[in-house]
Length: 501
Image (cartoon, helix red, strand yellow):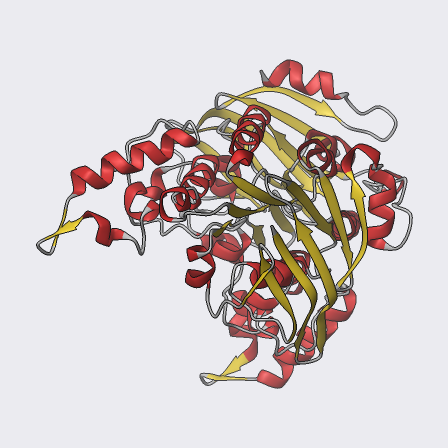
């Protein structure tokens, strides 16, 4: 049904795609895996029309096509659900669903909002999401926005006569297990009308959903395997070109933290509607993980430490001083760094270079009489590019053009180079491949060894157990239990789940 033939794509200094052959049959679900930087994003952008191939061609039902932009691809039935989401958060749900296609609801120059809302409800029903289409999108949870994103793509059903090709870019990265299963059911139900390309770093999910899996490395397809014949370890080896470290979470590098050096604390802190009576201490070198289901309050606790939320009661201290002015600026001045879940929205400034992003939180150090010392900024960036093995042509590279793993390294470098000794990690490995995750785990261990206190909201329970010195379980905004996670005596998954639900 859809085919790429010997597709090549080059950028300055980078051969992104090398003679890619890719085929998908009618009603088929194809998995696409590879490390960050393997070429998956470039391949997807060619499929939905954002990039044009330098060589090779695209065929739909054996007819050669060429797309100059995503709109042309959509008119041929190709849509995409983005990992970082393409929704405009200050528009309503229904405005987002029909963005660019409002004309169907216009009569005599006026939009019929009632008709748009009715049509939006029909699209939301496809993904079993029962929300008011008049709601402003910013008020939705990340998981709800992901389903709205899928509902938006499914409007192609009404606009295209032929079959659809839908790209799913990390659609499950922050979904709860039951939401993942609902998404998988929706995808399977739609295969009578659509084919899917499923991109994920969660190998078990790729094998569960897909019929076949394409494995990419360094811009090439290195293998195509049938899911029923595939082994996760074999795929991972082909992705990274080496065996995955058996000590995946680097537990052998876990050193005791300094219990006599307290960097910060919560004392019976509450924030209306989010959490209440939370108390804990964070010590130098400690990795403290907050565990709970989506909406349990753990993310709000993290954002309070960084000054983005102001509690209603209780006492927060940083470096022995009570916090009275809750703001990001004050927290940064106290040596707090924050790696947010949505790194492209809150962690980086797209359009700015690697070196500009790294020094963004410490401009005062690199300016004199209002003039920036750009040479010093660039040297710092080059040092951290080397220390963290950031894959970039140079410090002048636009951060928006880096892979997810390398963007995450830039955010970490921003805080580490600034001397932060409390670092908050909110899902630091979300959307990263196995190799990039291992790099992040190495960085967590290195920061801990340097005496940095880390508060972590992990992507999985296994990650929380593997990385942490201490785990606090939060349920419905309340602290349920605190676990000591010394090497060799860590809690089990069951121990955590028992207090989570």
